[in-house]
Amino acid sequence: MDVTYSIPTTVDVVLPCLDEARALPWVLDRLPAGWRAIVVDNGSADGSAEIAAGLGATVVREPRRGFGAACHAGLLAAEAE
Image 1: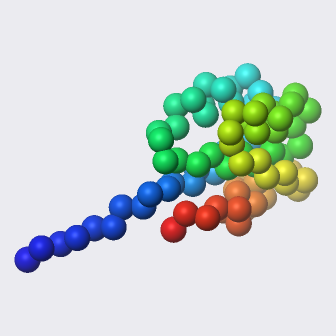
Image 2: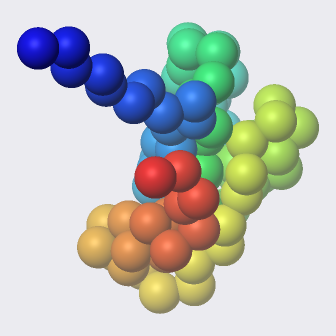
């Protein structure tokens, strides 16, 4: 019996972010090819959103503070299956 698996061509990775400007370059540089970073800025004051966008990440701004709100916003922005 032959089994065929469908491998997604894209993986969306949701990264909740609050003042992570120093860490973002390190994290985003290590994502494998075909993985799309969705950085959810949760009110950063250190330019995290601009740094993430400059490094090619999709940036979503979520004004409601908290990990849950940031994760939810990121999942709504995700497009991979």
